[in-house]
Image (cartoon, rainbow, N blue to C red; front, side, top):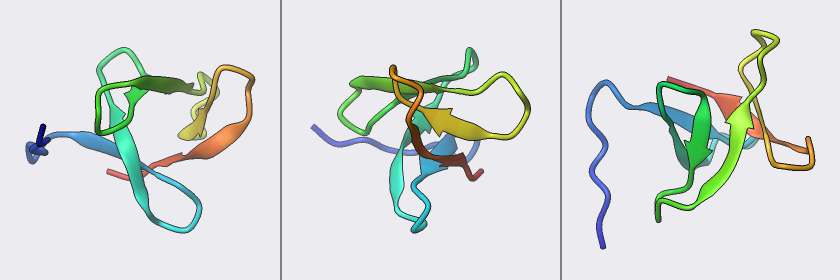
Length: 61
């Protein structure tokens, strides 16, 4: 399976700058295999957290 990023795809990076997934229009984050791994916080910070509230990274583009 391959994933192609469209130019309008919003992606998530960890704090080292490594891409770890994409964000859909509802703020839900999926890795590149399509597995739901977390969500974007509602506080406007762009932080991405897993289901326990642990920070995974941030929205980068």
